Image (cartoon, rainbow, N blue to C red; front, side):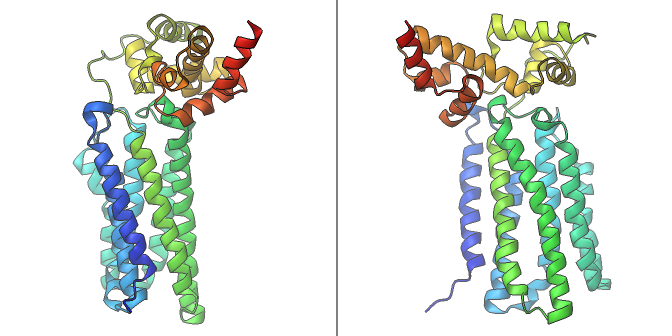
Length: 343
């Protein structure tokens, strides 16, 4: 009977995930969601790493141990670059800056030739360093995701924070494996790598997939901010004017950068003003305008809930229901029934 190691199965599943995400990224004409190349590369590298693990632990091909540390060193930088695309006004990263993130893999290559034991120290440090860097990018909360549509910020934020902690746990796992080889000649290494590392690869890939699906394309046609108001009241007045009069919240791909261009107010100023004045993040603030119109439509029309979802700017039923319940403490159906009964 043909033996198929679990890492091979995981590699196949990750390749399927890559195909699904890559295909979804091609739908730019409908949803304007371009490719997040670092996240796509992360999924591919994770699949390749899982394949190498199958060769090493499933078939005893020891030669792959010269490749696995190098590919492992590429995973944290790719995760960081994918996150950076979601948090920066410009999604384009200069080639020289991207080249800096190849240095960890280069360092591992050099250590392979000089001091292989040092890899057991350097590799966890790479994972820990990039995990901290991702958490620093996320320190502003969901408002840090300037290039992500407001509807998607919550799940994307959770996925990215989870990915950062997965990098930390993966570093700890590498330390445990190294200690296991030192103390017990690797008695528990296979179990640790098979389940721990594979789980980490899968989690990182899924996080990258979730985050890349939440990406929205910046609206380059909008003018750059022309002024910088000094008070929170002026900033809120400018935002409320857009949301109430022009109903820009109906744009399903509205994000913090796009809102800033439309208002002519710097994105950080919008975020700070809303945080201080309402104790909410920008996505919650915008989604409340969407929910308010949804409530009006539920009460004043006979439109199906599924139509109202898209009319007010939401893209998925799950996000709509979550935000609706957060604002009203009831479901859309309960809201409509309550209003009809009170009438």
